[in-house]
Length: 197
Image 1 (tube, rainbow, N blue to C red):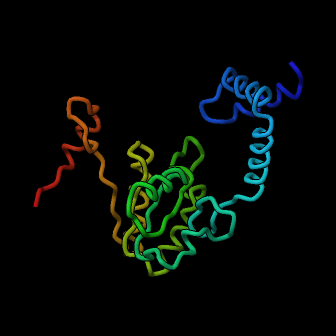
Image 2 (image 1 turned 30 degrees about the vertical axis):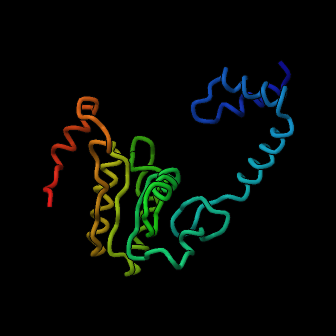
Image 3 (image 1 turned 90 degrees about the vertical axis):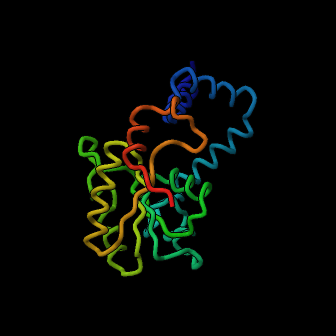
């Protein structure tokens, strides 16, 4: 195998879920059938890696110092939704009618992985909470042990700033059947049931 081909295969392995065989298949496909698209992909990757950074306000991916969501004058400045990743921000934008602001942690509290308050930008978040505009902090961290610990920490931060923290509901999915829901999800849904009005 040539040196360049080996380097291409190794470079493709950085993608999530791509092992040696998948990377080799991708490399061969690009070289055999998609050289023009491969060059376009390489150019787009090069440009994105050099020009996309993080918004100075919410930490989402952005080509400008302040992203379009933070710069928008039509978004509700009284609600701030905290998510772990830009992927989750995109999911909320696509699936809901939420029109407030965001803050992207780029992770969750995990001392074993070296992720503490500083790495998650919680100093910047505290500054935003202290500006006086935000009335509700929506905690949209994942329902994992680390996500729950992060939500608890953020709720304390919000309360200290006089802001009402709220948490996304977790439980039985819409259209789901109880017999197919895992035990942990069902137990959580049962324990956090609400009165019908």
